[in-house]
Amino acid sequence: MSIVETKTEARPKPGRALPFAKAVGRFIIAAVTTYLGLLAVTFFIGRVVPIDPVLAILGDRAPAHVVERVRREMGFDLPLYEQFYLYLKGIFAGDFGTSVLTTNPVMVDIKRVFPATIELATLGTIIGSVIGVPLGVLAAVKRGSFVDQIVRVIGLIGYSVPIFWLSLISLVIFYAKLRWVAFPGRIDIVFEYSFTPVTGFYLLDSAMQGQWDVFYDVFRHIILPASLLGYFSLAYISRMTRSFMLNELSQEYVVAARAKGLSETRVIWGHALRNAAVPLVTVIALSYAGLLEGSVLTETVFSWPGIGLYITNSLQNADMNAVLGGTIVIGTVFIGINLLSDLLYRTLDPRTRSR
Image (cartoon, rainbow, N blue to C red):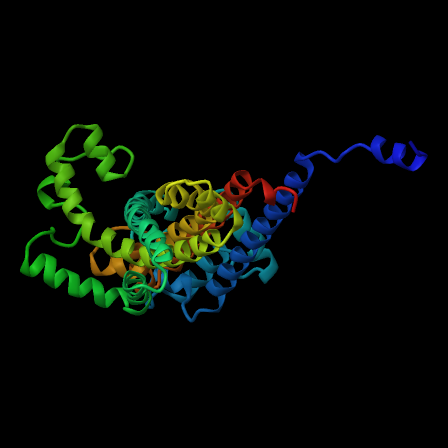
């Protein structure tokens, strides 16, 4: 054995955990940078919009000396960089200011309304995933057939039709005509004061408390908006599932599995879909994040008391503390879901750990 070969064999192999740790570190740095950028954007938006936050609090008829005093107390007379420092200090302390509309701390309002959005988006994502993944698999297996064309048309409609228009049409059909669903809102007024939520998730709370009449009423309120969000999620998930499955079905291991005599069902669902499920984790996570931040129109049409409707009402009333606070919370959740999906992707797919 030569000296060169001996040195080559004696060289220690790099640890497997090091590349993964480096990748996680890079993503965390990117997430922190993105979050600071989000804070900077929201801060400067709050300063350039033609809305005076002091006048929004005091009103247009407040005396000039009172306006100036409140302006000094709120720090608006300080240089911009000092205002930004105080803004960051308050955000990291969980202080988003006080809502002009509700006179409550913005964080208190967000804790009250955000569970409604999470519940709606979660149910919508479940509907979109449970239906969208099988449709995508079926379209890939039946590529070029009539079934494939139908699935692609369903997805195209989901991308093309404005959600507010589809929401209004759905209300006319399923509420006004068929009476299959309840009136817009989250819960009937009959149960609003007799039901005490614990977690803020009405379906979960009513089931845990054994109040099945409340559960049924909440379900009748949430099923239509959740189905609409699920349809738009389905359009994205089915298209991406089809694309991933087409790529997997063209791989050599699929040909080998078929040559071994495995059933087509096992090849598709046990092998191809199993490998396609790794990138699908990221797709479903991004779809969920999109529903959390993009359900404003749906919540407005259905009078759903979530963070989307809260931000809309605050914007209409020039309540910039509430608008910016809600935007930061949604942005934080979006960044967190991206981080989690990336970590899951690297955990499920060993090939990405060395990148």
